[in-house]
Length: 368
Image (cartoon, rainbow, N blue to C red):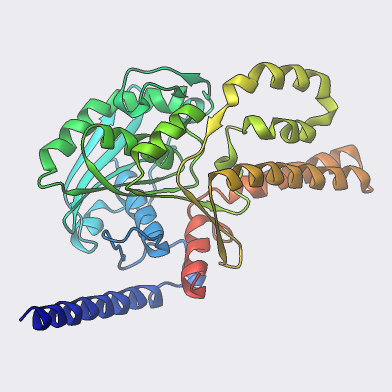
């Protein structure tokens, strides 16, 4: 009888995997590389896997975009945002929005296929940009800091809604129900801060996906967060030339960053010397870098820091080549601005040539 039971379980498991693989391929087939900035008709999410899944990263990104950028009182929202579609066609249910008007931060908590989803809105205002740039490391009295310093702007925003998030998740989490935390850009930063905090609050954080996320906490915080999330799948997805995802500049890469502005070397030498202690940010999770052709590669935390130095060296070398070329000072300055603009452009979700939705579709189509 035990043997028959084992065979039955094996057959059922195999059938489930086959159905899942078919659903995933159907999902990939409906994606269009020529229309990569358009909302997909369907999404595909596997909330059970601990392995990295690009389909998850893509679908989580769209969920955050479609649900959180919806405000009847705002004229700045994404015209394609559609919370109703996310509920009717994508399977999202029991949606609650948590807002703080003072700091212009918004979170969404919802149910999906037996899991609790927690996600955050991307940068949506000038105030958000100011808080993004408020990178000093700071002590806060919230469980997501684990007693260590975190990014002042991000900590301020998350702290403003933290108790509401914890309370809402607690009302939903029964029988160790899995929690999935995700977001893009500022939303990704909020997700990375939130995940270890929810573990500290006793919740089962299953997956964490952050696309285009800047750094969020000190090295000590990162060590504590990594320990708290040791049983969770934590992934940072970054376009290969996304500048925003490489800031605040690592203390290890400040010298390379300073090379970009050699014309103010004395000033920046003094400035970076004073700031070095405030730039001691750490990283958590596995890093997945997506190239323009859709290929991907993985790196651990230590390798990611080395690659960040290489990233700034590469830009410095591009600047140097521009300086050595012919042309007026104005022409050279414009070309440098274009280099930085191209790198910043890779941070956008729906840029038609190099945004995250395009790069992730390319990766899915190529099987990366």
